[in-house]
Amino acid sequence: MLACESLEAERPERMLFIGAQSHAALRGQAGLTGWQPLKPHADAWDKAGFSRNDKLPEGKWPWVMVLPQKSRDETLLWFSLARDRIAAGGKLLAAMPNTAGAGRFEKELVRATGRVDSIQKNKCRAFVATDDGSWNEAIFAEWRELGRERKIDGTEYVTQPGIFSSSHVDPGSKLLVRHLPKSLRGRVADLGAGWGYLSSSALDACDGITHIDLYEADARALDCARKNLTRHSGKASFHWHDVTKGLTEKYDAILMNPPFHSGQATDVDLGRAFIGSAIAALRRGGKLLLVANRQLPYEAVLESQSLAWRKIAEDSTYKVVLADKR
Image 1: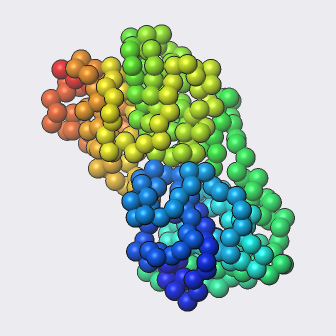
Image 2 (image 1 turned 135 degrees about the vertical axis):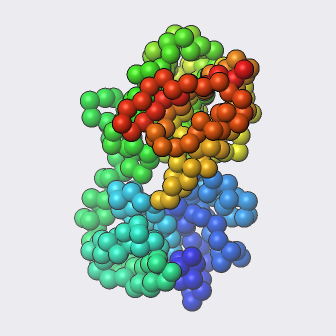
């Protein structure tokens, strides 16, 4: 990790890591606090023995490291969050793959700070800006505004930058909702629930659902889901959880629009792991309802576990599959 290499020449006594991910070069770093909204990375950070806050902490640090994701608004927002936490004379260090737009974001940071020092290696770039009192606070203020909650056009659903489908209702999820069996009942789970569209729609459409558990790896999306399901608060529970690790409860039905990307890479095994966790958590006679891109070979997982399945809807991009656990 280039950011870790950049620390070798200068080890600050205290450091905040926004988007924290574990790395061997960080071990032994005193005064290191991490914040990571994605559960798998947060779990890896905890396992490595580092200090972590569930909420981004306030305060000032001599160094703030940023390891942003691929969203433009999220990256600029995180730069502003870092700026708010840098002590006078402190440093902001960011690292990104070139394929995620590292050069473009370096230029953005130059625009706000006047100057950065940069290194490139292994198709990645790390850049450091030092607070000399001349940073353009108006630009950081603009970026800070990107963090405000936003509503999906034509709806009351709230989202925020960086989470999945933050600007619109995912079309695959829309297709699934149009074909929800009204007969769904009992205790239901929504795996990879995002900001709550499937769960909210299912509770609106299916009177027989007694409770729904939302499982989501992104803490920010889960916070939005809590707000989006306020009117269903008595029938919904929210879990910051890595679904690939399995579930402890049993369900009468499970809904999902499983992810199939790890970072920027396609990862079909991620969707397969979601389906495996769902099958294990279904009661006998339970139903699994999923939507996915048409080319993804998820039916083989269902057949390998002896589930009876059928395709109940499809369009040019997506398919909706209903499976029964016999």
